[in-house]
Length: 491
Image (cartoon, rainbow, N blue to C red; front, side, top):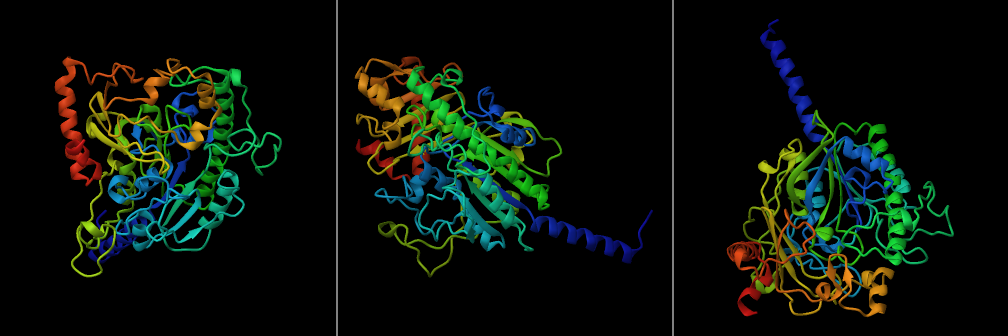
């Protein structure tokens, strides 16, 4: 049947209004767990009790080769919300306490860019960034969340906010504190003597003899005990995820909301968190794009947390506004209020088009990682490139001993090592001596040596590979304005 001209114009007007409305209501929920590795059922862990996240993975895309760029809480979150490597933004380590790192005021963050595009924005849970005006959220809903460890209450707060009357699209930044270590008995804020402490959450307890000890940790009693507590914190994290997904459905937003779940860095044990070894950097990433017809896919695409902001803006169809002109290098970070604005670029790129693809052939086969501090007392800059099957780590602070985050050093897992005072003892895949004293370059063939046990940097057969990756790494440092690029010349 053919439409008359006026009817055709009316139909096109309706279609245009529909498309405009759809574009205007592309909502986003970004969920960031704290210190979580692959200890999830959907990633093959048979011990973890994570039914809600498993369901999200079954209804989304699960990435196997997703990487944080720096394995430290504050620094990693600055990358997530800026699309830039933290060595270029000044957020080298923790924002809180004596560390006092923060982002240059010239940086354009995700919540600010979305707010300028007409989005309402909300933070629930952990923030851990500075300064507030760079990462400004319209509102926070922290009431009753018990420091971000009660995800059920966090989900209730989210539902209340989502249900508020508004014709604006939304961005919800939902950040549980679990399974980060916590103070008090139990080590992970589990409150073993207060089973009803977290209202609405039934504790899921584990026996040390039943946990799964990853190969990068020693199988010792103190490790098993800590892992049992860690798994309980993971179960608590998962408890509210189902409520959060239901909140989206009950408020009518399940089919117009991009949901991303990931972790800021690896598990809070020596050998993972604060390192650029695989357990510290290779992390879970689950993404549900409601527009996709086929869900439950697994992706082999190589992505990093620098890609998160560009991906979200791509989904929202928001173009980043031009950046203000910055004064000369001696005043880096101070915004000049006059002069023409510059185009705004990210270090990451959108992976939205790769959500349906299982093959890595359509994604870049090269990523870069950058870690400098955890706490300000933990100076140990590392840069890394993963290219094809190889990974090169540049330990810039060599020969300094590797520093420990305070929570890792104080952990029963590491204190047991300290008390035994045996540097030749094997800790995971390395001796204690090798873990603390690292060579300037570490080159691994991840295809043949996923555990990163054989350093090929001094192998004559890999000399060409080493030099090629060194050249690429240095060029990338220069391109991204990494201050530590000077170390190639002066040290």
